[in-house]
Amino acid sequence: MNRTGLVLALLSAVLFGASTPFAKLLLGGMSPQMAAGLLYLGSGIGLAVVLGARAALRLPSHDEAALTRADLPCLLGVIATGGVAGPLLLMIGLARSDAASASLLLNMESIATLLIAWLVFRENVDRRLLFGAACIVAGAGVLSWQGHAAFAPGAPCIIAACLCWGVDNNLSGRLSAADPVRIAMLKGLVAGSVNLCLALVLQHARLPGAGVVAAAGGIGFLGYGVSLVAFMLGLRHLGAARTGAYFALAPFIGAVVSVALFHAHDIGRLAVAGAFMAVGLWLHLSERHDHEHVHEIMEHIHRHVHDAHHQHEHGPDDPAGEPHTHRHVHARLAHSHPHYPDLHHRHDHDHGPDGHTHAA
Image (cartoon, rainbow, N blue to C red):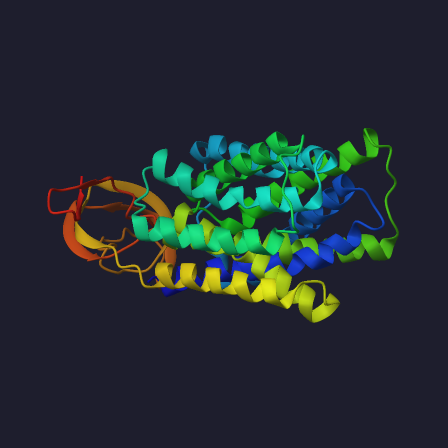
């Protein structure tokens, strides 16, 4: 298992899951649209401060690949689907649904992410990964269950929101070589501004007090901004299907925080949900994907060290020291080792007559 990717994906889930109970407290004093706007703006503004400080102090992490013109379609897709359309569809769906039905339907995000990664972007997804993801989603469903789950009128909008976030997660994977802080900042600023304007103009809402705005900004920075940066770094190492599956642990984290702070969950349900998620997590952690595969010639730019996949010479203008960022070319390479659909292992698979997976 790629431990770096695992830690980053779980950190993303922990931050987002832990922020949810606190974010729900904000809904007592403002509309959901206003809360979404302030949370996203807090994310964007906080990350803008991080970017400025990082550049001013010339920290090593400042050396990340910049966004290019070729990244623009994916970036616009991420902002449109995950930052604008997803939250808006969710707000419409929530207005027409009960809390239990909405919570259960929101578990569709991880399923949408995995299916899009598998069927559209051709990430390798085997039965073990599918069953593990199903266990994690089942655990989230147990947490959300409140005795009934009718097909509410708002269900199509909530499912559409989850589909938007599934597209967002996979498009973010296409951008994972670029600076995740800058991407998350742009998403937060644009999405926050759109949601806040919708609340102010269409709902004639008023901004809450300075203390509530500051609290929303802090929650948004950690639970949405830093969480998204960790999620995108996880995508860089694990691909969308696996990172999305780990992120589905967020409801369990939120439930644990709710129990600790507000005594808001049934301990029995929490234990059952934890058992489902533990099985799913174990199936993923014990996964081993190892076969002969071919790296075709590829040229790109990202932050890297000189490992087995980065054996290239430097020109006079390339940076010294490691890790570093510069445009480089990968020569054709055929080898076998355990790997995941990271930046360098997005190859097709087929299944031979022996039942094992082979490079296409």
